Image (tube, one colour):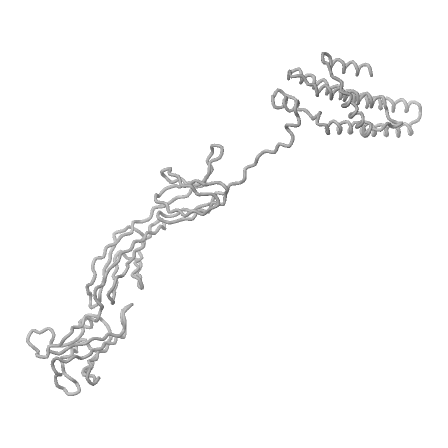
Length: 420
């Protein structure tokens, strides 16, 4: 058996000149002695033979030829020789057990054989451990690929390689929005994101920043990133908003004794909300508002479409006069025929359906000259205290108290009227 093993090894190494390195052999020998001490019950000759076989295989791999096809054949041959050596060792133990059984020493021989088997197993593992420590022999998956050939020749260069895993990139979810609506996009990633509008125009959303965007086009948008030539993105829609607009039809006019501003719109929508400042009106294409003090006022219209999108527009209107119940400034005591000022009653009170009380007061003594709650009961210049006409070219104060004023209207009005 020994001759067969030696011949097999010689055949696998035929044609190669192997340089001898005494220092390498001495180092190997010391490691083998350390992990495999000689035991009286071990099969020493086979252990030494196995170690010699391994040493030859080690030297063969270290001097591997450049030709890859020949190298692969020699690798297979060397591997087979190592397997054969292991089988021979195991076979010898089996034979030893059989011989001992024939001699009638069943119990003792079985125990010795068990010990020998344990020693063989322990002896083989340290050999593999030594070889692995010097990175000479690694398990080979031999096939026709160049990569596996290179790995067999230089196994150290293929150890410790970990696949590179990309950090997960988070793309924010954006709900459908309306045209003209602003959105804030939060990019928590270490790379920039790209926003594409329906025309393909790009907007960069910088890494680790929040970007505010107001889309100017309706349609489908996409936000994402490109990696290895592939686009990863999420989409959202920008929906159309109604076109809100209105006109101011009348301003600085009086309707039924009230200062009135009329507005109207032709915008298409499901609902309309008018905002006149302190007053709002909902649901109609036409609306009106009363401003009682002069000044500039902003009127806004919000139109809501069928898709829930809204659009808002505003305009400014100027009111040039304060509202004072449309009262005249003088009273004609001559009672001339055709005179429009031969009696006094604020005109608005004759047009409005309102509860009121009016007083005419003598500024000289503070006495009440006239008082009424009926708009048809006009003051004609008679002092109720004397029953006589008051003097000409004299100023009197009037006051009106409203019990049910309009929204935004004051309840007390005052003014003066001068007799002629």
